[in-house]
Image (tube, rainbow, N blue to C red; front, top):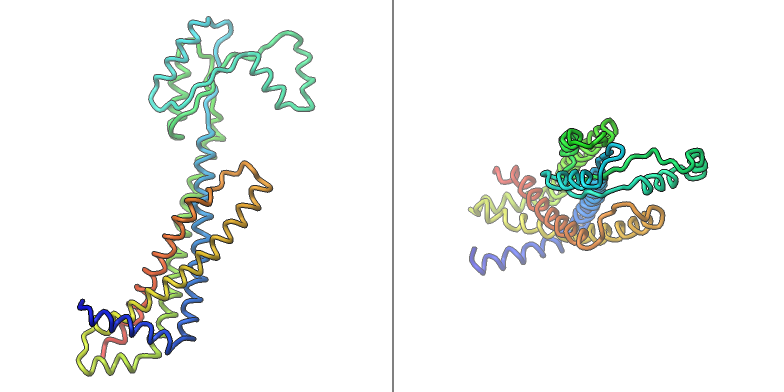
Length: 295
C-alpha cells in the first residue's frame, strides 16, 4: 500500500467519523457495552478456574501408619513416598499433633476427648499432596500397599464429586465465552452495518467509477478497527473499575478467597479486550460491507 493511498484511507476514516458522528457514537457505545460484558464474564470465568484449581490442589492423601511402628520403618515409608512420581509434599503428623488437631476441630465439644484420659488411640500419619489432582487415586493405592501402612484415604467420593464440579466449571466457562464472543460479533457487525448502509450510495458510485473492492473496503475496515479500539478502551476503563470494586468487596468479606490479583491479570485482560475490539470491528466491517460490494 503506497504512502499517498494510506494517507487517503486514514483521512477518509476520520472524515467519515466526523460526518457520521452520531452513528459512530452509537457504534462505539455498542462495542464498549458488548466488550465490557464479555470482559466481566472473562474475569469471572478466569477466577472460577482459579478457584477450581485451588480446590483441586488442596486434595491430600492421609496415610495412617500401623500401631507401634518403628521409627526406622516410618522413615523408610516417608522416603519411599517421596521417591514416588508426582508427589509434591509429605508431612509427618505425630499422635499428639493428631489429637491436638482433633481437639481444635471439635471446638466447644473438645471435652469429649477428656474421656480418653492419657490414652491416644489416634495413629501416626503422613499428609501427602500430589503435583496433579488426577494422580491422587493412583498414589493412594500404591501407598496403601507399602509395608507398615494401615490405610491411605483421600475422601474418594468427595474428591470425585469435586473433580466433576471443577470440570463442569471449566466447560461452562468455555462455552459461555464462545457464546458471548459470538453474540458480541453479531451485535457489533449489525451496528456497523447501519453505518455502511447509510453510505451505500457512496459505495455504489465508487464501484461504477472502477474502484477495486479492496480500495473501497480499506476505509471501512480501518473505521471498524478504530471504533473497536475506542470501544475497547472505554470497556477496559469500566472493567478495571469494576474489578477493583469487586476485589475490594470480596477481600473485605472473604479474605482467603483465591481471587486473581489485579496486576498483572487486568493488564492481560486489557490487551485481550483491545485486540478483540479491533478484531471484531474489522470482521464486523468486512461482513457488513460484503453485500454492498455486489453491484
